[in-house]
Amino acid sequence: MNYCDLAPSYVRSIAPYQPGKPISELERELGITGIVKLASNENPLGASSAAIAAMQEAIKTIALYPDGNGFELKDALVKRYGVTHANVTLGNGSNDLLELSARAFLQHGDKVVYSAHAFSVYALATQAVGATGISVPATKGYGHDLPAMLKAAKTKKVKMVFIANPNNPTGTFLSADELLVFMRGLPPEILVVLDEAYNEYLPEDKRYDSVSWMKEFPNLIISRTFSKAYGLAGLRVGYALSHEQVTDMLNRVRQPFNVNSVAQAAAVAALRDVSFVKKTFELNQRGMTQITDGLFRLGLDYIPSYGNFVAFRIGNATAMYRRLLELGVIVRPIASYDMEDWLRVSIGLESENAKFLHALKHALGDVK
Ligand SMILES: *Cc1c(COP(=O)(O)O)cnc(C)c1O
Figure 1: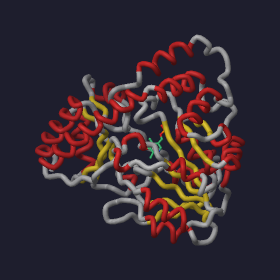
Figure 2: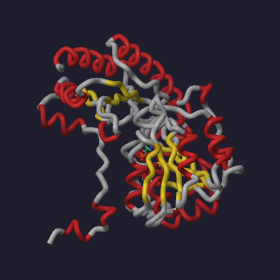
Figure 3: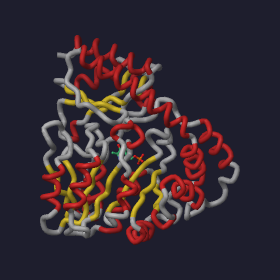
């Protein structure tokens, strides 16, 4: 017998998430060192030293179970955002929150709207609970087509919409005005998961206060993460802010200890270290200019990005990805996002960005 057949068909049909290639794996394969990984939108500055100190302290009590309610981290978030504890759900990465949203509210037969080229976890979370995804074609510039998504959301059985702002892997951005028009047009019984994993990278003039929208829209679930600008991707910690009844349901389906104690302690310290996030933001701004200028000079098309990564168009993306690996640079193919001719590069340190551009220039000569 085939044990795969014991799983429901909607589980069998899930295409696994494709993570960026780990440095250690490429080292083993090629026997080279000095590899630059610009494949998973990680923080090139590492983590805040305050967060690292908090982790070292937390390790001392690692034999104990974590606080299952995450009181201190929730308290820090409550004070930052002016919400109550009853509005906060903690997650093992914000990925967890996306899945909890699906698990708490969706069942077989429900439909879920998201955009083409949107973060792939939306489709995974949808499929894993036997719901059906509706992928709405993107705009010309690869961004979410909110008016079309609104129309799709108003069809039968749609219960949830996922929106990424900025979106990964395209880096596209939706303004507060566009989002508000969408929210106001949507029936309140349809939940909206607004994934703001890259929120901290938005320039001043693009920032908006989605948390304040929760009063007007009880159907809004905002998800954020400590994996990106806070530099804690390896720890797995994120959070969702939502109406208390929605939060209640999210918390019923999570594991009792879904966020470990070291992660909770680090996140509290990271949240306080405002200057680290500012430094990260500024480095990213400079790096984005460095990389997009470089891409422009090489005559390559790219999608203007509001995250810490940029997608660029390149013929023969698979061969180019492999050639870059040989040259010690890991980027991310995004063919699984229906973007066969594109690669995505994360913004690194100045020297890493330079190494990437240098390797790319070389590779362009090698790969036809
Ligand atoms: C990276 C990312 C996340 C989640 O990452 P976690 O590490 O699970 O918090 C969520 N949404 C988008 C769009 C991302 O790119």
